[in-house]
Image (cartoon, rainbow, N blue to C red; front, side):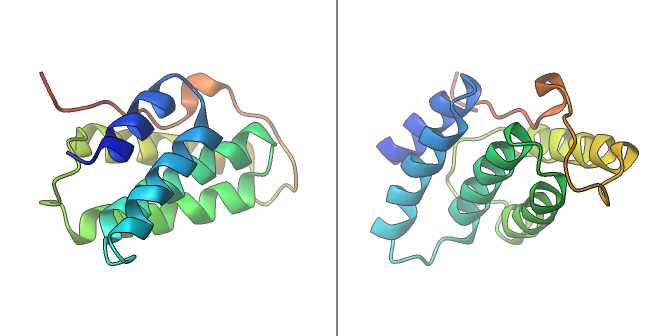
Length: 121
């Protein structure tokens, strides 16, 4: 697994979404930006940054795009529990929808954010 992807997963799991975004982006750029699944991880991290800033609309938009990217190539060697990640993204989208994604600013609890974990033993 790419060291930056592994680091991004660790940072994301620790709630350091901005730093995780940077780690994922380094891996994505190194691959010539032809890695939709890594781009999806970048978008999940960016969505969480927006959630921290109480910006539901951009977070919702990024989560939906990320879901498409992650499901576009589910066999990508990300070493992420993809099914769990997508399920937690769907749950987060439901919370956002219930909170009124049309509202400009609103806070949802971090416990509702997507969860990312390594699939490594």
